[in-house]
Length: 273
Ligand code: ATP
Ligand code: MG
Image (cartoon, rainbow, N blue to C red):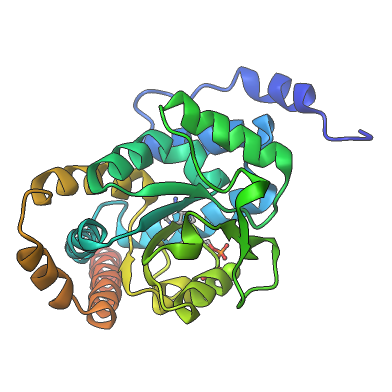
C-alpha cells in the first residue's frame, strides 16, 4: 500500500456484524463509529488509541454513569448556564460519537461550538464542520479570517477562534489533552472536562471534571440542562460554588477501588469454595 487504502479496509470490515446479544455490543458499536470517522478521514489514529485508554477506565468504573459524575454534570451545566461566553470545544472523536448531543447541549445552555484539533488540517476541519452543519449549526474555528492565538501553547491547537475560545469565560473540553487544558486554565478560563481517566492531567487541571464516557455524558447533560435552565442565577451559582472538584475525583477513585475490592473478594470466595 503506497497510501492508506480506504477501500481495502472497508472491504475487510464490511461483513463483520456485532450480534444483538453481545455483552459488549454498545462498546463495540461505539468503536465502529470511530473507525468509520477514521475511514472518512476526520478521526486520527491517535484518537482511536485515546479512546482505548478511555475504555480501560470505563471498564474499571463499570461502564455506567456514577453518582460523582452526575454531581459534576450538574455543576457543569449550572456553570455553562451562568457563563457569559460559554464554548464547547470539539475534535474528531467528539464529532464521531456525540455531535447531535453537543448541538442539543449548546442550544440548551446558549453556548458556541468550536472545532480545535491537535492534528490540524483543512480537510479534517471541513469534514467536522459538515457533520455539525448536518445537525443544524455552523461551528467556529473553521474560518482563518478569525484566527487568534493562545499564548500558552505551542502546538497547532494554539490557533483558536477570536469570537469563540479566545474570548470565552468557560470552555467545555472532551477527550482532550492535558497541555491544552492547562493552557486554557493559564488564560483564566473556567474549564469543564469530560474525561474517563480521573488521573489525567486534564482531569486534574479542570475546574469541573466529569469522569464518564462522552456517549453517556452528553445526552445526560442535555437532560440536566432542560431541568436547570429555568433556575435563578443565584441558585445556579450556589450549585457551582458548592462543587469541589478534588473531592469529586476522590469519590470517583473510591468508587473504582471499592468496586475492584468487591470483585476481588468474590473471586477469592469462589476460589476457596
Ligand atoms: P493528559 O494529556 O490529560 O494527561 P492523556 O495523554 O492520557 O491525558 P490524551 O490522549 O491526551 O490522554 O487525552 C484523551 C483523554 O480522553 C484520555 O484521558 C482518555 O482517557 C479520555 N477519553 C478517551 N475516550 C473517551 C470517551 N469516549 N469518553 C471520555 N473520555 C475519553
Ligand atoms: Mg495527553
